Image (cartoon, rainbow, N blue to C red; front, side, top):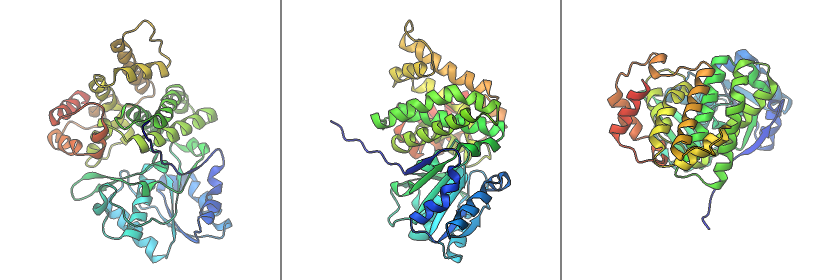
Length: 382
């Protein structure tokens, strides 16, 4: 029997879970924490709750929230300086993927030294990281449970993918109530990122029974609850189910990795300030069509998970229905359907394709893919 590995942090899930951050850090031995967040979290009021929880637990807190979408290497360096200057001993990330990925990257530097560029790739981290507690407020990135950090190299204008089990946080806190302050557009974008994580993890060549159960449930929950979550900020059931979908998709892709969609969206995100989930959604149907040849049975199963009856359909027909479902979901929630809808006119497809083909996520794509294939997929998504 094949041996499978599955890594994950301690998970605290539920409405009000954000209030447990101080006690969680204290259990890990923290005394002076660096909180990494962003302006959106600050304005929504969640940062104040985190600070209050830390104070009640007897912790001293410093805050770094000078972040942009698609966090940059120089932002990581600035955060590292705050950590060192305030003699911190633990890191809390509060927000979406940008804040959490930055928090992880800061943690790398404060114990391993050097520059964040030194850790691009797989298993480059040698020294243990300080305690990490991550609070997801977006139901999208899955970074709060993953072994990934994605940071933009500002000189090369390229997203660097850092992969290491050292990046799996000690504790992940998911509070569905935090999703009530998200805009419909952000809810749609992050939800489509969840769907992409789940589908890419499910068809990955590194998928296992341990990741499949997480990916399949994440697909099911997104198919059923993303629409109502976008429709109403106060639909608590939809928010809770999408928070769970994000968690399970994160666990799936952290262990099974991803595929061509993320390799290509990483390339675009390193150069253009577009919403990651929207880029994924524009690329996903085209990559699904390309990958169908390699995993037709899994695409049939995706159709069934989404509630489509496949009893009278061939594998090809069922796979087509799955792709149609993904397109319709994206359309229903108002997401851009093409990359050109987001303002990208295909500039530098040659360069973007070269960057994408070298991305670590391409290794686990289920179908062999060439540079010309990537160029074609970019053109189709325009």
